[in-house]
Each structure stands twice: as structure tokens, then as C-alpha cells.
Length: 147
Image 1 (tube, rainbow, N blue to C red):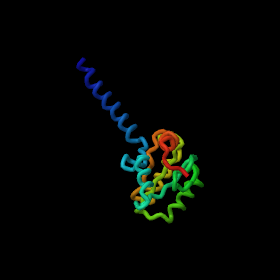
Image 2: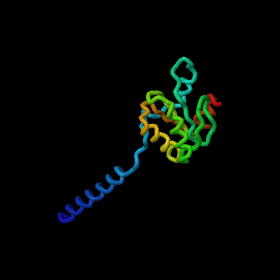
Image 3: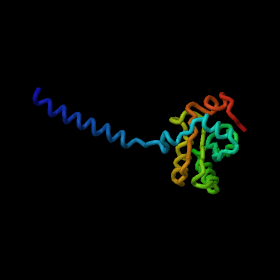
């Protein structure tokens, strides 16, 4: 038994080190929880015309929220370039909200490249609309404004 203890400790250290490397090696999302905007918050902003309005980009294959600029699926380089060109006229301190709404974030091919572009460009108030399921369930089913 005494001979097994150092072996078990060494085995534990090796396993722990490998798990740590796997966790550290995972790609983190380009956004944090502070970068998420709840749908109700955006609806509230849209309902206050005197409030400073965000620039809203639809970066997916879904319908347009009221006031959104339709970019198209930013999984495509052409549409990511289109977003890049559209951002050229937007001040860095302006609130920019992006949304896709095709599917839950974990499956969405559009939000990561678009949000990463906003961060790379230095947009201080970049927000990702927190559509947990999709645009229909988290926006249109509530009767929130659409184009």
C-alpha cells in the first residue's frame, strides 16, 4: 500500500495537468455576460425615441427587428466584409447591437465572427442580443417590434 501512494499521487498530478490544459486550450467566447443585452432592454430603448438609439445589425438569415440593418449571415466572408464596411461610419463609442436568432448561441455560425470584429475594431458598447433559443421564440412570440 505504501508503494502505491506515490504512484497514485503522480497519476493524479498527470491527470489534473492534462485536464487543466484541455480547459485552458478551449476557445473562449468573444463576449462576456456584460456584453449580452436582454431583448426587453432593447425593446425599452426602441420605445424611447428621445433616448440615444443603438445601431442594430441583423447578422443572420432571419427577419429584421425594427430599425435593424440587414447584413446577412456573417459566417460568409462577403457578409462579414459587408458588416465591416457598414461599421466604418459608426462612431466607436456608439452602442452597436448585433443579433442572429437562427439558433442557440452554441450552434450559431454567425455571432462569433461578427462580435469578434466589433471587439477588434474597438467598439466599447458592443452588445449581443441575448436570444437564447431563436428570434421567433425570444422576440416575435412576445410581439416585439419587427420591420
